[in-house]
Image 1 (tube, rainbow, N blue to C red):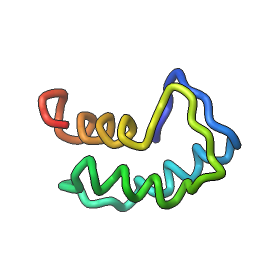
Image 2: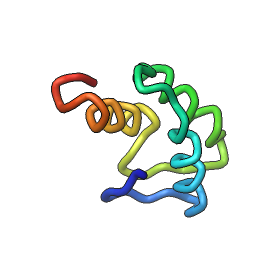
Image 3: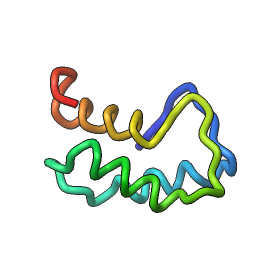
Image 4: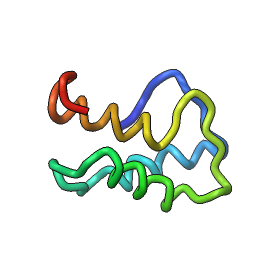
Length: 69
């Protein structure tokens, strides 16, 4: 589950982000994760203080430790 100091419009985009991340392979790369997020969110979602790439890096670090992103 993603949380932090950022804003999304619409608020429901957070649920979309979490659903996209659930079930991803443990060894999914940052590019693969950010592409999946970008595709699911589409152009109608506005992100402030966060990006699909930043989410992907945070997920990789959470799964594999800070050294691997």
